[in-house]
Picture 1 (tube, rainbow, N blue to C red):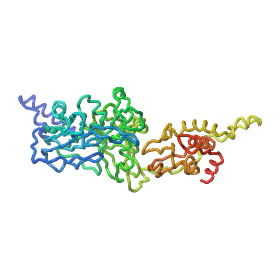
Picture 2: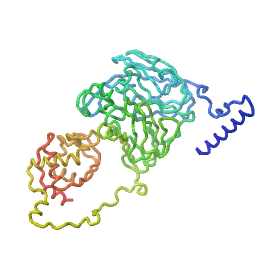
Picture 3: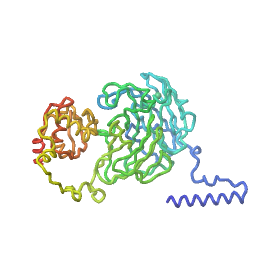
Picture 4: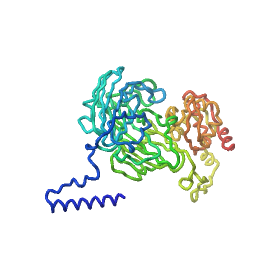
Length: 490
Ligand code: CU
């Protein structure tokens, strides 16, 4: 199709070029015949825009003609949760981060009403990247608390655009959550898909480090240094996990409208276990195909599409991967439906692997050497704790974190954990054999995967003793015999 299209375009260019030489005064306008200029599209009727809160998007525009579209948005400053136990005073469009999704089409004439709630402390405005005009509307939309302003613009360029507050200090208004997406569909609309969702990444800068409890203030110094404490999808850690998971059925095509509000960081957007069949690069008209990770600039967007072939959880991440597992940039799309083992089999076998010569061992010569080759026996509780700390640092810390606090909505805490303290044999079993499926720890439900840990009985006893004797746990000492018993029982 594309080759055909560009060939015919080439042909017309050549034809017109010849025209120009032969017939003086011949113009290039003929080339534009097929698509009429957007500014000439007439609108019929007035309609109030249907706005949606994330992660939902309004219905497609393909079926309707260009209209006068009345958009009403309200600036609201409000305290909301950043993650468990941490809150933040967000500045928002319509009370959510990102703000409402606006869906328009080329030729629409927007009558934009921006209201600033009377309880706001500051004036705000809006710069829509879909506007052709100074400040993208910012100059016309500056609005004090308790006021409303109206401005108009005609939608000319199809694409997916960020809007954001542009009141000084601009960086601070964006860092507090003042951004969202406006989609401009082409006249004929985007091709239909089965599911559409709205996701916007943003970076946050707080006085306390990640997870430090309480109401956190904005930290200007960290923001200037681009030293983000939180990097999240849809305004908070876990907005798209647990209850907030996105959903699709096997066989469906999913389209994500993904924006990056910034203020600073560029997103390497990736969905673990999927390949983007299509990416509308930077939210524009060029479509790339078969993409693993797409860059989304701060103040930019992309439309990505993929068909879900097999059931399971697909994890949305910023593949600058510490942001995903340590700063919150992680979401889940859960696909349900029949397995398709031809496309993905899951694990089909597991056995012992011994490289060539692996089983050959040299015979120790003396009793002393035999003794020296064995690890020391009968470690004291304190020695176990020290050894366990080392094992923890190698194998557990990435998920359960340095102080055993875990990662909200992803990895359960070990600190002060009821699940851990109520059953030591179960805990040993999980370390040895792994665990999948839902568990409830301290009232929170977790549904992640822990793999079986490839460690010795002594290391397992040590690391569990370390965990049980730290962070408010019950002080249990785990022995090698207890570990051996669990190995035997499985
Ligand atoms: Cu603002």
